[in-house]
Length: 241
Image 1 (cartoon, rainbow, N blue to C red):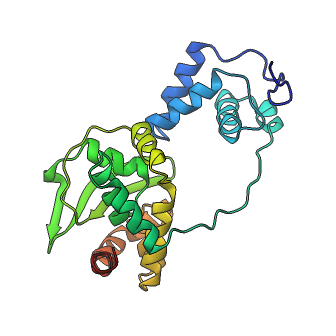
Image 2: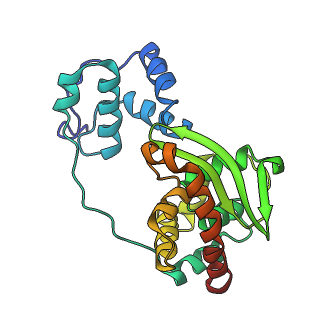
């Protein structure tokens, strides 16, 4: 039996395949391939007002379509700020859990770099040693990937990388099976860097969180500072993890 309280009947007909393709082709310029697929999957079903992902997909669709009345009519569920940050012991346990799995290298790269999971996956999928600049066993890999306001020029790491064919959904599935939520890795890295007195603007640059307005004026300064401060975090990793 369908629960009519969870699905909106105000959406009218579902988007046609032509509309979904148009929406996908526009949004692939702003978000990852996996996220676009998730959006279109939700758009093939009626809006579920109790599902945040469904709400987000439909709001983006109506905004893309230019139907601002329906866009405004969908109310986004408000949620509190997630303050959870994994402990050092928790991350050590996770490193033990991923050892020997197909996501071990991806997990190590995430802990070392602090970049978003999708960015770490893209780097490994397209990895070429020619894009690495290494000094004293510390490397910066050129990524130069922009998605809307999200932009990462370099990925900092110490572990030797190799090209891997791995998808976001597969990696997330493996981590879910061993009870690891990848979104907390990034928060862990930022927290530890800040605790080591690495300036917040440098942490933001390393993790790909610097606004374009600042990047356009201070890119070289931030890169120089990142190379200066990143070894502090690396030394901490070697002793703590």
